Image 1: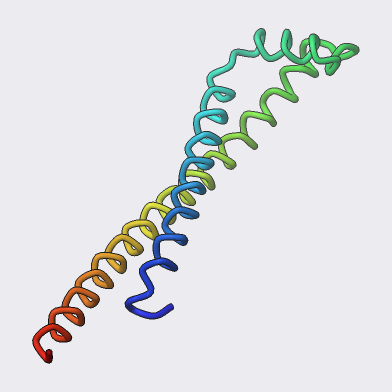
Image 2: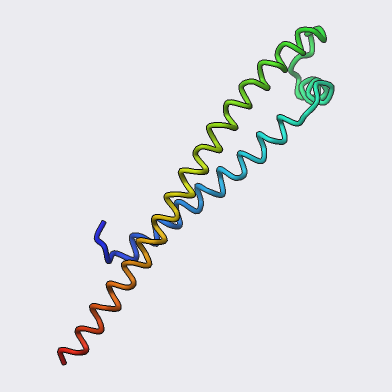
Length: 113
């Protein structure tokens, strides 16, 4: 990437912003699932056709494993959010730098004339 390739920087910035929105959505969804009670999870599973033949103890065991998995997913997503936020900040700085370089180039070009 060239230091003055503003279009490329802007395209990458848009892509990172889309990724940031997707991560935000996933984090919200996983957080909501983590707050779900065992009874609510059992109702949701049975309405969806899952866990219909399982005892309450088996459901509780599956629920506990799901919670642990969701927590690890949430931690990974939050780590990705931090990385994405850092990348977006770097891209914004690169864009500002490229704009300053372009402005300086055009100013020096005008001075030559």
